[in-house]
Length: 417
Image 1: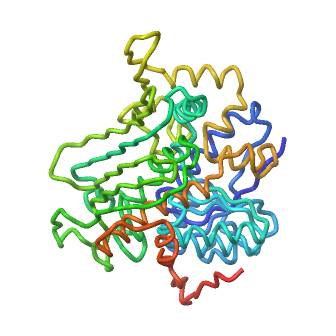
Image 2 (image 1 turned 180 degrees about the horizontal axis):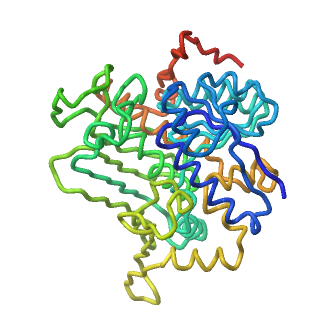
């Protein structure tokens, strides 16, 4: 059985989710025909690296405080990038330049410009590149995409996507998360991209990747903070509300609203309206997928589900499509469907050649198109008007970090390729 050897860069919270998924992949190896083994980890914080190594039983020789040293190894097949947003671009490019294919945690980057750099690098160097977007890897998404492709909704003409939370600012209200989440320098933006890649990316994929035309947006930090709780030296620099309306070339309108802090109740409301029917998307996955959860644990809002509203034999109906129940049966009948039910499984299958460019989901492009939308919101806020897709592409900023302190050395990243 083929074993893919993985090197992880970054030993923070998200790396533990990835490690859990790799261990759960092991349980399905017989059905998949392959497995994965993490053989090395790089992390700039020596204490965090030591604890990580002890937790997973790694020898000191396989732990690196300088990721560049790990990239010199010739016994690693792929690199799994688990660092924060504005390090995704320089570190992923460094790994690709060192000869590795790359699996990258979401979001691809903090701007369309930075995501495009990674995509262009992979294309030029012939590397395989994949971005974690767990919301795509659910029966909910597949059923919705198939229904729209078949014409069950007629012509889709409007999407509403709202995710409102009262106090869920990572690193501030939720101290178990790193404070890098609210550092402008490290994160780039807040909930617009942190959760946006899941929910916007899912909608774009379901709709068959329509071409963006224009965006009108609003974004700011609206809720007061207590400076005594701000421990990151960069300060609190990201938005807590992001609101935009996009028009697409096929005539579709797309309304997006997300908050990480609001003086209102928590709620989410996502639906797609079509000329013959509509879909309600319930509890889109934003937690890494089923293999990212320990056995028996369910998401707080439940499994991702879907409801259809429309006409059935001349009667208005509301139908619960029971995506999770039917998806479980689907995977039991065809275990290979796990390749479409988990990000890391899809990437490993893609790397092994089981899936190709046509059969895998093009997650880097989906992630880039999400960033094109959210970049448009921030550009519209800055200019005080609606902006066209050409303006967004031309003015998308470079937000990636150009240097990082690694031990006693200030390392300047070379993103040329």
